[in-house]
Length: 87
Image (cartoon, rainbow, N blue to C red; front, side, top):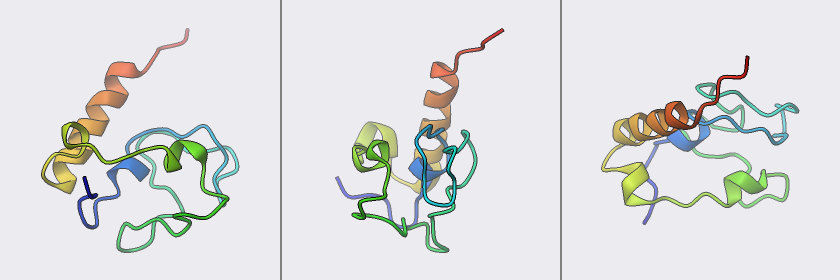
């Protein structure tokens, strides 16, 4: 499956614990990655500094749905379902 054009949901919704150029401590869920350009395309796509977790992600119909909005909703739901409260 190809990504939905201009989506960027996978670079916004989930947290990323790996260092990202410009975000040495990774990024929290719901925060836009600094490597997303104005068209929601990754500026470091296929570059060696791209985190392995990002390179390993592949677009899937169940996650991405039919639109950027659906992808964002699906990923936010997954984040909420997998979030662990540490007290």
